[in-house]
Image (cartoon, rainbow, N blue to C red; front, side, top):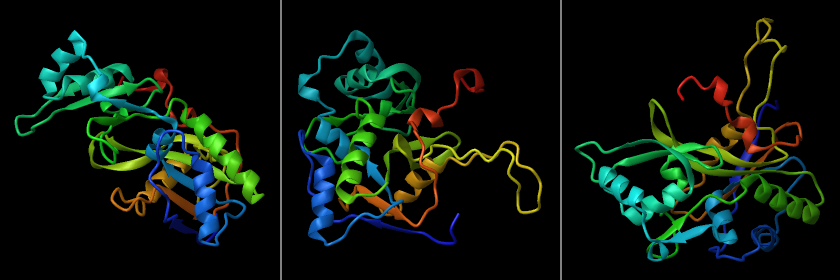
Length: 257
């Protein structure tokens, strides 16, 4: 790895609506600021602008809750219509609970893409309209690849794209950004067979490279600053045919399932 790198947020991006060409909007913003992407740059893009552009949203007024959603909503004191949307995005509910000191409880679910997260990643923050819920993109890896190809074609260099979302973490407070879509960027750097600083061989070390970048992007990706695109420059990384599934632990290795 190099001794240093830089990261910056792309300011001046517009609000995004269904049908917008996200890659072209990024290109236009770079052009307007007389900047360009360089070979080896990695962009971390908040999934919400991807989801909005692709129309991955739901509207409470259009939802009729099922009996299951109504019963589950009583447990966690949520709008049963929102619970119905959460269920539609989930393959299973892992945990539903509400502490006495909470106004609204929590639903931990396994998203249909395989992620374990609160509310199956269904979110209301930074929604454009009351009653709008933002979902994950239908295929985050495909979205990342399409954006990356368009940027590479315009700027004439090899790039990487990570689509991120904000997840909580078991046993630790607070949230951090994680990678949910990848293009060219390795999810995990396998270091088996390499040596540590004292010459000892590494047998299990495998940094989650894409998650590390996604987490770092959160330092500049403020929810109130409209800065959904963060650019990392100066890293040395191997271009790979990657997928966000590279970061998911196999079910037979999951000790907590």
